[in-house]
Length: 174
View 1 (cartoon, rainbow, N blue to C red):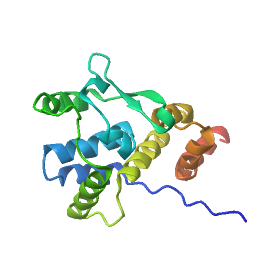
View 2 (cartoon, rainbow, N blue to C red):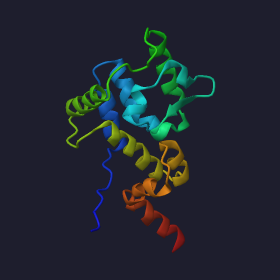
View 3 (cartoon, rainbow, N blue to C red):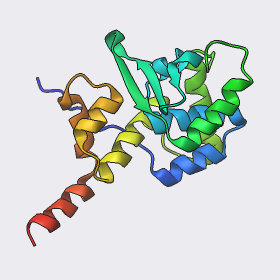
View 4 (cartoon, rainbow, N blue to C red):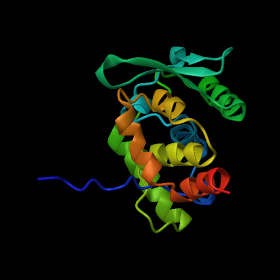
């Protein structure tokens, strides 16, 4: 029998900004921003070490599913915040937390922000993909960014942005 796959849940950029503003402290704010702007999985986030950040190039080296390595860009403003945060750390790990702790931080921050949708670290990953796709970023770049082995995994996001499809139709069929 065919299983109906649920579309990925995501938050809007406005909701994301509310989430960031509701963070309790700099660390929590950085976690939320890092999850959204890089699209890393929560397991990848908690295993990040200081030496995974390529400061000069503006990338983070991420070890994903199946031990696959990928380079993920970090926006300049986030890199500056990260540098300030990392310089004060005495841990080798950037976010020495469990995946469960990060999930709780995101969930509780969403509640504080008054966001009624269920927000998880994975929802932030979906939100990045949806945002990029809606801005016209090629799906193959999104696949690479998220570390999907198959384009079919990434294509689920194309169903989330029907307005983009309508826009394309308007351009093609004037």
